[in-house]
Amino acid sequence: MATTTEGGVDTRHLEEQLHNHAIRLGKLQNRISQLVDELEVMKTDSVQFRKALGNDLTKIIEKINE
Image 1 (cartoon, rainbow, N blue to C red):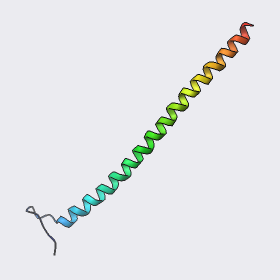
Image 2 (spheres, helix red, strand yellow):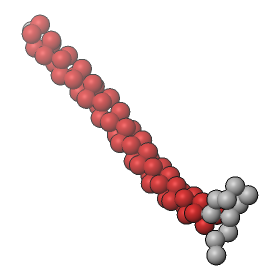
Image 3 (cartoon, rainbow, N blue to C red):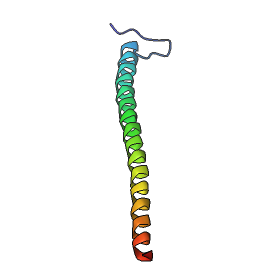
Image 4 (tube, rainbow, N blue to C red):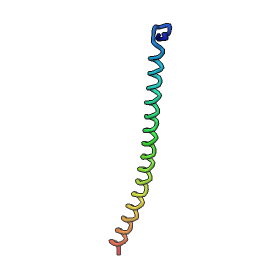
């Protein structure tokens, strides 16, 4: 027998929905975590690329000025 609330809603259905939402929320939190990690890697790569590019351009300019 289904337990109902005052509004006539099956509480088992609500509990199932809550459980499903909790699972989906957990998956979303994991995905957000992965994206944050990937963003940090991209930031680091970007900084390293800019430094390397700056060094290369400096070397090229020094060679041209010789």
